[in-house]
Figure 1 (cartoon, helix red, strand yellow):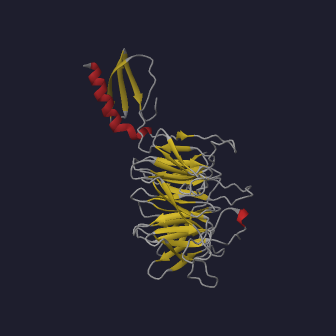
Figure 2 (cartoon, one colour; figure 1 turned 45 degrees about the horizontal axis):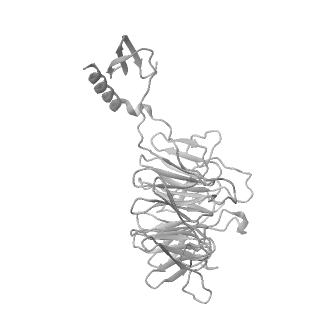
Figure 3 (cartoon, helix red, strand yellow; figure 1 turned 30 degrees about the vertical axis):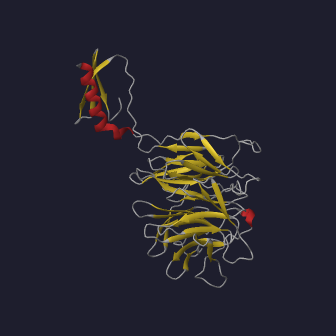
Length: 409
């Protein structure tokens, strides 16, 4: 009877006071790869994460193609020079999975691949300079299937729309002198908001590609006209985007439209007015909403926001490849920083949030994980009584003990 009373009181206490014991998110290591470049097990950066209709987690990698993860084992899909139906290139910047489980994989230098898991076969789409309806460029960096079922492909030479029945592409390019065309030729990020509007982020953060600092921009696509509205940095207007290299776009559950760019480029955009509210990093107040701290010493790339994501509890996650992750709690309006340099984030159907690193590691967190309070006692306990008004916990055993939950004494 005493043990039953103890159990019932403990459950009551946890239900009433569990929210007092929140702890920082715990990153659970899922996969870790050999970091020795040249080792056959080295796959480099995990460049993208998705989940298929059967629940499998898929990964794309910088050097080892596609990987399917079932929670225990990996199945690799890589290029086989002797098999023309294999993946065309092991360097896969991103991919997309449609409702039937078909995977569309971007490759760096070998076009767009379509993978049918039922046939275990890849179909290749390549640029053909003699065919104007072929893929614009063989380097593909972004893929999106919109709510209408249209597949959009972002390449190093513009934005393409695929007619899957005909296998033909319609091109949207940067046209010098036409402000209603795409703002820049290199498309790095595609996003569709809840209104069905297609957004296109342009401009590479990598300095080795020879782009000018002003190249890039955020674009809103008008489906009815085929025209674009550009949103570019204006040094004389503090309500414009901070930097034209755009790599992260996200609409949260409250309708806030987040845009992440290179540099100190965390914004919320007002889509009606086209104005941007900046959330700049302040080293004197690192707990304020901002991107992770900037690294001013990088020589091969402009430090950029790699992703913006939201978990089931409403926290906003802001990642960078060089300076870790910031978790923003809208309730407290505070930032928690994690020293984990991440490339991608993805929320799976079970509520887990997945994070990949530039080094090739994979982590996840469970935002709904319950933290059970724990106290060390110096004598056995056989009963509990919680006094709500004073917030005191009384513990019975060999004698009586009181725990003040306000002061933790």
